Image (cartoon, rainbow, N blue to C red; front, side):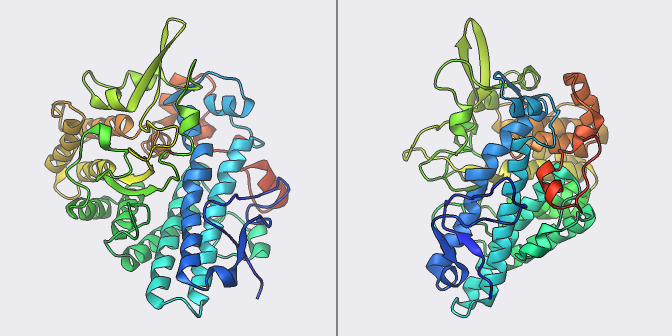
Length: 449
């Protein structure tokens, strides 16, 4: 049987520019499939390596760039690829765009390999195979959720067969969403409520439920979104919400799932937190103006520096940019604060406890931020506006939430065309990387590129 490559935990992913997305080269420090799945220790290293991709590779090439792409961040330097994100004019040849696409598919490839080979292993215990497969399905669903929202039509790859993957066509988004939901339901069924190992860095059943709630929200499936978020909130594992200054610590009770770090700081922190001088990535005046007076999130999740008499704010949800074992931080994947906002939106649209429930959930978030209860109009339109505003100041710089919320609310063109003169209506999707189209003639470029 052909041997497919799995990387050791935190090993480098090597992809040359002339390779198709899943044609993974042979890196150093590799294990063949037979050795990886010979025992639980090496198989655990394989699944840990899949988790690591999100902190080590995906977040640094993804999150801050979508902040620039919308109205969360501004860029103060001149690197061409980054300027393109800042102007929302990303070329198909943009290397950062290519890296984002490639890293998501690298994670998917690894998950596919784990699912296939774990189930074929003759030595792993059945319960462990179930655990491993369920986690891999969760991570695969997580990757596809963001891929489909960034690029629209993407190939749905469920195999490690390089020949099939190299000439894969794009799949209808509804089919991809069906696979995401199927994977998450399987993960929810296969995982226990208990976290494996120390910390909350491997998915449990509530992580699957939390992501399902978000997926259902994006599908306008209000009853299921409310039901899933309620199950997570009522588990008692993640509430009550603690003050903002504790949210992003590795031991935060608000954490539903985070991606583990090696030395207590996220990979991208040194790029976001300046040691001196002008920050490269500064909070936009638009986002800065969105915080109400007295909002503790502005106090704890932003930091400022004075340069040439000008005050510049930069993102500070993560405080560590060097090793810190006293107050370590992991990269947040899913947290309870968003679950309250998901349920509030679903309730505003008629699910669960309706308008009263939505206001109650909204006020939980506002109270934690040191703000008074919501006192605006209680009609559906006004309340939805308030919830989306709250999502903006609560979830900024987390997993491109601003970009995704603008798209699904139908307001992306109105808001971003007013914010930046370079915005085009077709920019609601990123370009399929040109390298991918060159080596897979079945791929079709998104409109406007």
